[in-house]
Length: 177
Image (cartoon, rainbow, N blue to C red; front, side, top):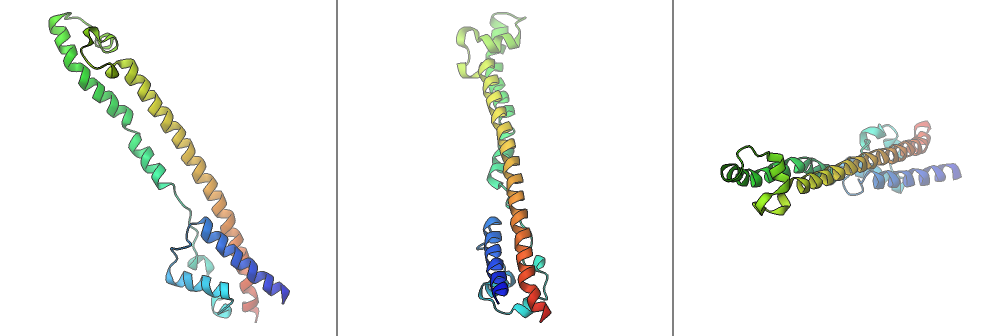
């Protein structure tokens, strides 16, 4: 009797852990909810012993959706910023070519901003530094997402395997009787 009681307690604890780790505590389907409720109350064990638990409670891992959206959206910020800066500098450079030096170098003009013809924020060095900061942020974000996904997957795999083992041990007695 103690072995069966321990098997039941272990199965309930393992299901609760799995549902918490996989973030399914409130999103179970009707059959899965009935299965979990019956295991928790130690009911209909004979009926549930004939089903494939993996079909009722499939493996599920959480994905960092918000972080993935931020990364996807921010990937183009350096390009957007650079083209925006170019759009702010091209007009003043064109006037500079007409009025000052017909053979001026665009990169020199973009960096030195002679006569303060465009806002200081659009200088080449500022744009390059901002682009570099965004790319550094994206690199760290990509590493963080990868770490997050792998650690979550590992935790989910362990919790799922423990749940399946505990349920198998719990349901085997119903199969034998």
